[in-house]
Length: 220
Figure 1 (cartoon, rainbow, N blue to C red):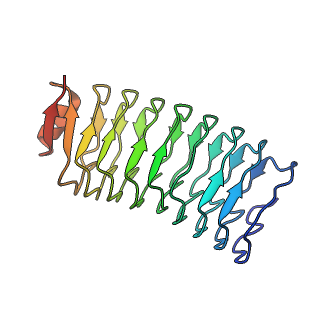
Figure 2 (figure 1 turned 60 degrees about the vertical axis):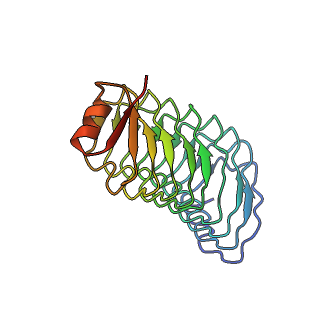
């Protein structure tokens, strides 16, 4: 099926896939505003860029273990999508994949080794996220304006955190940063006035907190 084949099909409510389809093309169901639920069949390997972007009423989607990649902007602006199970077959999540969606809680499996920038940008309902122990960098704008996010643990696989990662996360109170992190952009916590960094004594995180006027608590 060609890219954008069902773009802006405003009356589309149900989908049944042919067994011959091996991937969901870019923008295939973009702006199908009445689409509420979808089951992706086993055998499909990737979800294309903007595949379900701005499907405003999409609440449920089942992703099979055959899918390895979620493309850029795939579920951006899916306001009713509050939860999604990411299977352990996924290795890549693209830029802005869930930006401005209704996601409230999500666990990214350790199979994911590549996460783009701004994956959860503007997810104003997000309260809980588990970052996999398989990624080495928290990309730019990753959680920008996730205004309900209160705490987060950075796994010890991570070595760097990009710019504006938590910009505008006004509810963020606690973040645990491991000793593995040796680079944090100076604007990573801009306008996070409540945040306290938890980390180890004499670590990069402690020095970063001191240099940027952020509260720091030592963990043992």
